[in-house]
Length: 538
Image 1 (cartoon, helix red, strand yellow):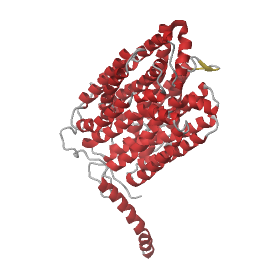
Image 2 (cartoon, rainbow, N blue to C red):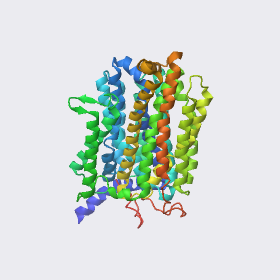
Image 3 (cartoon, rainbow, N blue to C red):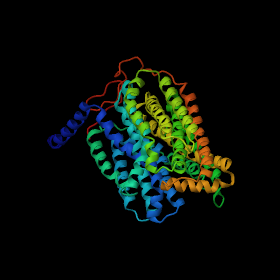
Image 4 (cartoon, rainbow, N blue to C red):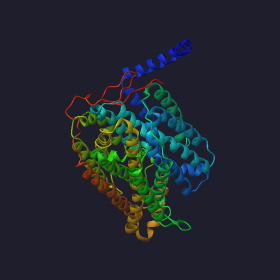
């Protein structure tokens, strides 16, 4: 007894300090934690697009060819997308705070490595490590929102998360252009280091330690998920590189994609029949709004990724804009999206999700159609800025409402799994959009320019990469028409998202007080009866 009392006394002071720290987190509420997480989330999303602007500078700086530099982005996106289903579940098992911290530390260290590399091969390897760090971080942001905000307040929280996702995906080229034009391409990576260090400190101090759940990991399930996702994402992402034909020997792009689909089919079947705990709880899809939100965010990921490529090619190759000037066209979108996000967030918590998401997706489709109609060689800048402003309004009605609707009814013990699924579908949509828009651009160039399509495409890429004077007049009109027609694809795909959100049902919490649907507590005290267990002392 004396020994037990002595041991308890020896550990009481650190324990009390930890409990006090978590009590302080509880008193601050969940918003400071969310701001800390959003900082890292913004950083990793910007890195998904920022390298495209730096491609010519990397080619010159490392003496690489175009095909090698493409892998600087492709390797990052593969390492980011493939493990998302697993990393979401890791947050449920070990706690979203610690998985996020590990991911952010890995991402920050890899960013420093990227900037210091002296060869293209080393840069690609460093980008793989960076992508793995990003994959560990992303699901945890949504999981923390789900577990710390009551369902009736989750729309406001998701408005911040959604605005971050929407703006970061599109401002990457702007940040990249400023850094490449200024201190050099290495700084698109170096800039992550101080931000990452600040993010680590803030997350350590502000993000609560939420209760973990004893999930098991079947290695066969993890292998099926990883292999299936890799084959599917790699095949779609790199299909254009291999002209949708042979990769090497008997291995072809269609075979790889087909194999990935089959493996993922086996994975889903296994999840439904295994006796142990599934990596992806299929029961989550019984919630209609969760399933429809995943379908809709796939179309959003497809369209936002798909629209950027023809727009940037048009402004740089036809209008002769520099990368920075082209990216500045996105400023109205970013400003309006960020300004409207908190306003829309308040409505998300009180209004039927069908109305806001339908308006957001429809306005986005209209804005892209509008852009396609004004993509001519003699277009004035203001004619491009107006649809970009409408796109900002649309973004506010898409990202946050879809994320909030997807997570309303998630069980607390599966918050990470749900976040992993949602982010996976978004990323798969982005990969599909990238591959599809490249194929459509190639086809429309052939139609509009005929035999000159190959030289125009190469010249357009060169002009876009250097911010040169653009294409000669005899090619500019046909090139502009091809980009305009390609822009219709993402506009049309968004209409599929509109159809999906029309079938949303009204959340059960609607009409109740904002705190009626309890969140997981963020203090050391006892959990309410209707919530999952709360924060445990570290």
